[in-house]
Length: 250
Image (cartoon, rainbow, N blue to C red; front, side, top):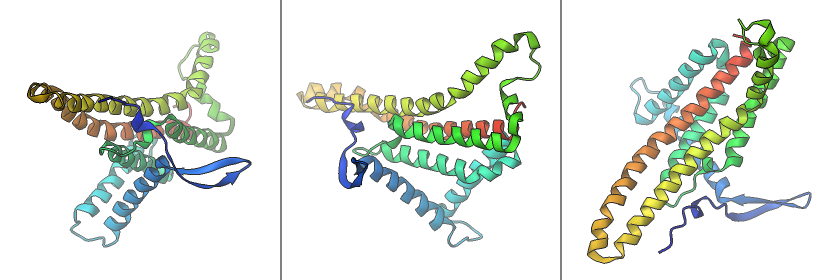
């Protein structure tokens, strides 16, 4: 029995939507799981807030907790002025979190395990921060690259480092999410594959499969935590970057 931990990340075309400039536009399994994530989020948020009961049920409580969690995150990092970006941060957090959780279910697809997806989300945040910062602050936005309290004679060294750090933010923002999901799912696949291989070797193999099975269960529990934590890290970094655009140089 061969173990192929990479097969789970293959993108498969389901059908062709059309062609633009000679390039095929296809609907893939990745697209399907993105739509599934959006559908689950819509079901929770719309269904949970439709009745608006004084004593909330479980779905309404989940919707309200999600709202308050993201709102408090924005207020604590970007200030009250950052609440204008609540729809952006909330959408990013919920999409990443739900798609990560769906990806833990066996034989499903993990959207965030592809760099093109996480890079697109990170570049979206980067350009919003850049354009809003320039629109709101004008040339004062460039104070972001001049830390306060730095002696003038070392500014020629510090400023290029700050500029390079700013330009590399989308890289770290996207690779962190992509790498953690990729590594975790590969580890799960490898240990689960060991369980299947050892189980075919008779009674002694079945006893030997107990250890990788225990590791698989432990890794699954860990991946549940990672699914939430990576969504939280992506969202709070977004809030920090937006705070830099709102209050550059602070």
